[in-house]
Structure formats: C-alpha cells, structure tokens
Amino acid sequence: MRNLQESLNGLNEHYLEMLKHLSRMLEINIEAVKDGKVSPKLYGECFVIEDVINAFEVKVKEDSINCIARFQPAAKNLRALIMIIDGVRLIERMADILKSNFKVMKEIELINPEINTRLEGAMYNYLMRIKSTFDSYIVSFSTSDEELLYTLVTADEDINSETKAIVDKIAECIKRNPAETNELLQVVSLVKKYERFSDHIIHLVVDLVYILKGENLRKKELLDEKKDI
Image 1 (cartoon, rainbow, N blue to C red):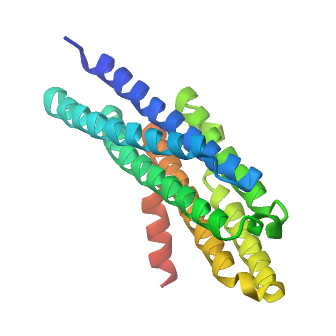
Image 2: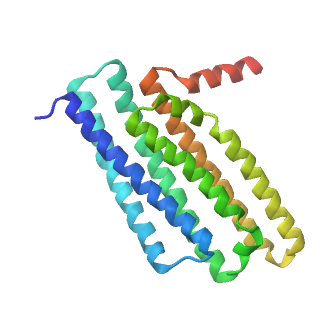
Image 3: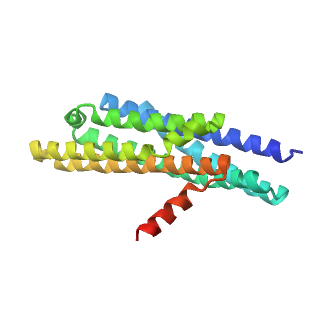
C-alpha cells in the first residue's frame, strides 16, 4: 500500500505525462501552421491524444481527491494536490483549444489553401513563442526550478504584444484581400484561442509558484487591482 509520498510521486508522473501529451498536440498545431495544410495523419493523432488527456484527467483528479481523503495532508503537500486537481482541469481545457483550432485550420484549408501564405510565417513564429513558454513550464515542473518559474510569470505580456501584432497584420491582409475576409477572421479567432492557451500556461506557472514557495501570486494580483479601483 502506498504512503503519501509515493502517491504524490505517482500523481506527479501522471501529471507530467499529461503535459507531454499536450506538448505533442501543440507540436501538431505548429506543424499544420508551418506546412499550411492539415494532414490526415496529424488530424487523427490530435484526436487520439485529446482522448488520452481526457482519460488522464479523470484518473488523476480522482486519485488526488482520494489521496486528500486518505492522508489528510497539510501545508505544501495539500497545496500540491490541489494544484494537480486544478492543473489537470486546465490541461483538459488547453487540449480542447488545440483540438478545436486544428479543426478550424482544416476548414480554412478546404476553403482557401493559400490563406497561410498571407501571414508570411507570423502564425508559426507566434506559436513557437507559446511553445517555448510551455516547454519552460514543463522543465520548471520537472526540476522545481524557481528561478525559471519567475521568468515565466510575465511571459504573457510578451505574448499579448505578439497577439496584437499578428491581429494588426491580419487586419492589413483583409484590406488588401477583402474577398478573403471570412477566412482571415477565422484566423483571428485562432489567434485569440492560442492567446487563451498561453493564459492557461501562466495560470499553471502561478500555481506551481504557490506550491514551491507558498506565495499566492494570483491573490497579490487581485489585491493590486482592488487598490487601483
């Protein structure tokens, strides 16, 4: 029968496995953007991975709740279990975003396979920036690298700036190619969903800071907002 630490180690392994599956889904999205087309192989792989993540979410959440009930952990261990429950919920949402965007890319390709060239690689660079942030989070989770974590806390500011830049670029494309307005607006929707994906990464980062340091950055953010009112 497992003790508390063994149970936590097992949950961390499952959580890390979910992160790796999500990373692969992001890679699949990037490959489609880079090539400007959605291959049937990648399309099928994306759906299979999303199903795996859903299954992991149910198991990890259930095991975490059972662990809390059985061991009644305190302080850092309790924070870790709560983070895992919240984290797997976010990972499932992030997988939904990537699956949904992949389906939209396939629809755009069927209507106008040339639409990707209008953005001159901007979408690819944008997604690579998001992937870099996500990969850094995975490393920080695996190694408990606090210094790396704190560099990620403000990463959303850079991504938000890149989001604005790419949306502005799409607006220019619409002016030059009004006949492609519908497809380009779909691309705007894609960008906004990827931005939401990156917001979830920062949420995971903040949760990990809370585990390692006991420092609730979200609470500080809300208090700062209240002061500004």
